[in-house]
Length: 71
Image (cartoon, rainbow, N blue to C red):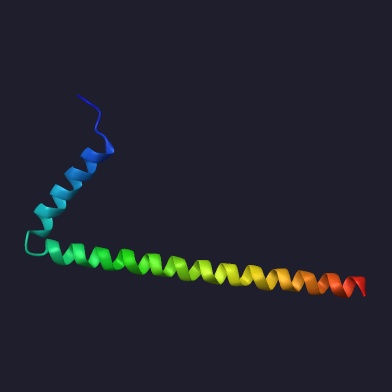
């Protein structure tokens, strides 16, 4: 028996989903998956903005602490 690769597993999984869900619900499900992916990426970008903002505040606080220390 030959080893099963990632591509083969994805094709088998897609076939099983098509059988279980049915051809009428499949486009709706794909659209929902696309929306979920878009929302996930949007959330990740927002989290990155927050992370960058907190890094800037941390740098400013460190600079202020250094100024107070040197005064």
